[in-house]
Image (tube, rainbow, N blue to C red; front, side):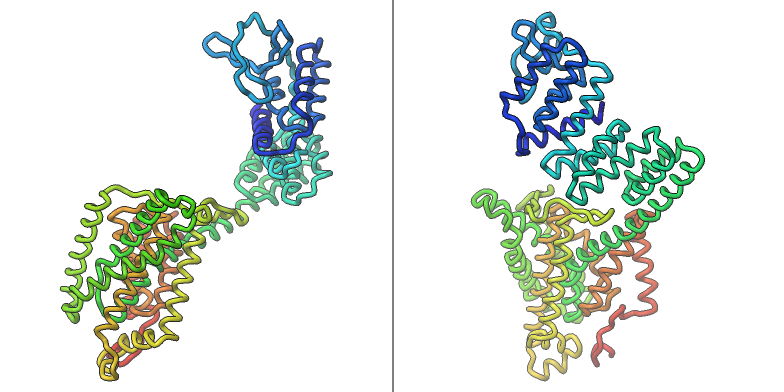
Amino acid sequence: MRLLRALGLILLFAAGFGAPAHADEGELRTIIAKFATSKNFRETEAVVRELAATGDPAVGRPLGALADGNLSFRKSDGQVFIVSEAGGALTLLDPLSGGRSGEAASREVTKVRVNNSLRRAVREAIGALTLNSPDAGVRLSAAETMFRSPDPEAIDALDAAIAVEAVANVKSRMEEARAAAVLASDLGDSEKLAALKTIERRGDRTALSLLAAVKGRADGVLKGAAARSAANVRETLSAWDAAQNVWFGISLGSVLLLAAIGLAITFGVMGVINMAHGEMVMLGAYTTFVVQNVIRASYPGLFDWSLAIALPLAFLVAGGVGLIIERGVIRFLYGRPLETLLATWGVSLILQQAVRTIFGPTNREVGNPSWMSGAFEIGQMSITWNRLWIVVFAFTVFAVLLYVFKFTAWGLHMRAVTQNRRMAASMGIRTPWVDALTFALGSGIAGIAGVALSQIDNVSPNLGQGYIIDSFMVVVFGGVGNLWGTFVGAMTLGVVNKFLEPYAGAVLGKIIVLVLIILFIQKRPRGLFALKGRSVEA
């Protein structure tokens, strides 16, 4: 009965969302009215088949009600209704629309009688309707439903649908549903062995559950074949799980890259341990929140463009605050790392409290544009659109920064200051302004990282605190001031974290990673990619 109700819902979905009808409403009501005049089960079954022959998905409602024993007709005029009983009163519902059509006493209506043979006819009729729907999505949903609730009596309907199906993935799902029905039937072992191969090719967790059930109730050759097929599916799933973990690692690595790349620039050029870097990320996230609020209130049609509008604004806001911090505090503390660390930590507390005062201490909602919502599957992997776009965005930011560093005059000045500050100053490079603009650039990049992180994390005053330690680990592991080191470090730490989490848990996994980095730094104090230059090497 669960299968029957599910197929009926599929039909109703198709009817409600524009599936083409094959008969007008008047014709359908005329056929439905024949239930009131049927004298026996054979005549009722004939009406069922006549309704199914219309090919109209709207008949799923009355057929499903008939199978559940909820179809009745009024004695006074022979009109057919779906009957719902609540509190002793009978509510009459229209058999096609499901709308309320009044109430009646139980003595005023007569139930259309059903037996097992009639229920089987209804099930076959609904199955044929869904499997032969003109909408490929409806056919696919029907095949999936029949796979999850296999019914041997649906084999004939599936055979007929498979013979005419032209869409490859829908036909494949129908064949899998037929295989599941064969395994639940009393057909011979030869057909069941072929069905096992079909289920094995599907290779997902639903298939594994079905194979485990077959293994539990079968014996002899069939039991061994089911065990082998289940083992093969487990191997396939293990490979896909590893691929899923790699993807999760790359996704986490891209987030770490966005959070750490600005820190790598300021730490490498200026040697400043900026504990307020996380707050630059937070400012970018709150800029996104403000932009989306303005758009919701005044320009709702532009919501899908909200992130594109927020990106340059977040860069300017965070970069401007960074420039003020460098000019107002940090430039007086160069060469004094402990004082710089304490000063920037104080600045981070000030910025957090300022945001709490303006926006409040609670999390703020930042919505996903339509193009960043939902997910898709590759094999047994699920990939969300927001994570995919963040990965693409992180790689794009990295490529742009590489270009700036390698092919612009300002990038040349930055590299010169990083490698030998005194020599760069003696060649006429204004190192104080290089420091100021570099700090502003690093802060601005942190701001646009906040735009991306607002799509996957809570926007709150503590947002940046969750990434500052990880960002420093990435920078130290990859090599201070080296962009390629930051990239490789972020991806490596992301993947390692995701492979450790299933076994050690999130917290213990981070601790293990931290210990491994400490051990690595003992061997390579300058990280994976050490900068070269006279002052650096000195």
